[in-house]
Length: 158
Image (cartoon, rainbow, N blue to C red):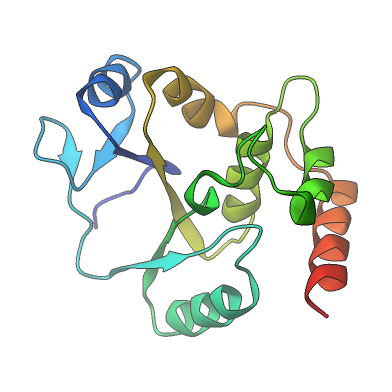
């Protein structure tokens, strides 16, 4: 069985591909050396701080069926990047702190689901590659952070 990295990159351009390869990042679905096509037992599921309910249900069903899960849309199309949140999602800014960006917290949230094997993150600018790849190296989400996430979710979507 092919082992997937916790974070995979889906590069948006050649500069991102070069930077990713320089830093040892794993690339998905790109025709470059080191590019990785997911094995057939791997299923991609859109999953992020803003898309949880249906994703969690689908992930649970797939995991019970023995499928391996790769989370996609982890940064919600770029919405979960510092400076790009709209006012409806402003509460998520509290997840960013010294040493951890909002994007890194969003990646950690996805990886906190034990059924998710890999967070596939689309990166469009080379200066963001290192930030994404370091998401597992920075301060992890705390119990208080997870409580905040669930509270924000419940209050926003009830």
